[in-house]
Image (cartoon, rainbow, N blue to C red; front, side, top):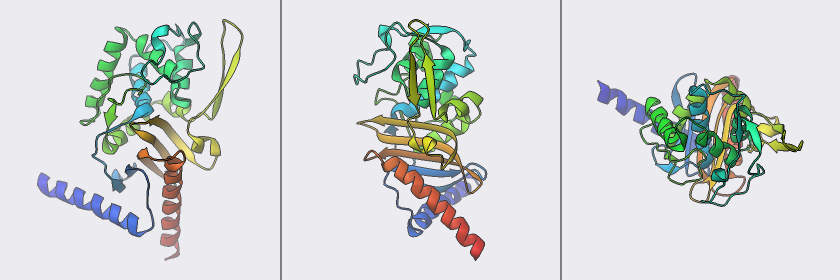
Length: 276
């Protein structure tokens, strides 16, 4: 019986993908999955079980582990030299010695994909970064993400890997956290540093959040040369909650272009149904 159900599920995913291609949905991302969160089924799939680096999509898992630990969000954490990226040498506007609350770091990690913020969150976890990474992998196991593996809290290592299918599970879980929904979809936020009185403006790394044309409930972008440009979202399209996973998009605007193609395709499909 289980084999029959599995075969029907595989056939459904295949025909859904084929239908989307025939209907004019030609996505450029190497792996893609459109998941109807209401019906619990795939609408479109492409290379959904290919294990790939996920870059800063990792930070959604980082946020869940921090919030699961129920650590005080008002506790101040000081950016340390250990938080500097020596792997990819990415820049950060958070200087060593700056103090921010755990809540501020969480917002910056989710909203603007701030690497030092995510590194500090992992370092300040009870037991340090080693315990934090273990908790990330335990959480992945708990969510049934069998093809996912994490080695840091930032996503700067290309050894942070997952699949489009696993990431749907992660986004579904992330949607259950009020702060993740709020922080990951904040368009812009100013942070005031108490030690020198400076105010720094940060913006969301997902331009679709800032565009105002989408109803997005969870968002996270990612980029590494090994991972390409990645995007995961939970959004309402045509009144339906949909999870979109786009991995390894070539070109700066490809991931947002693919997302807009998905939105247009779903809206056009609904219009056709209503007129038929």
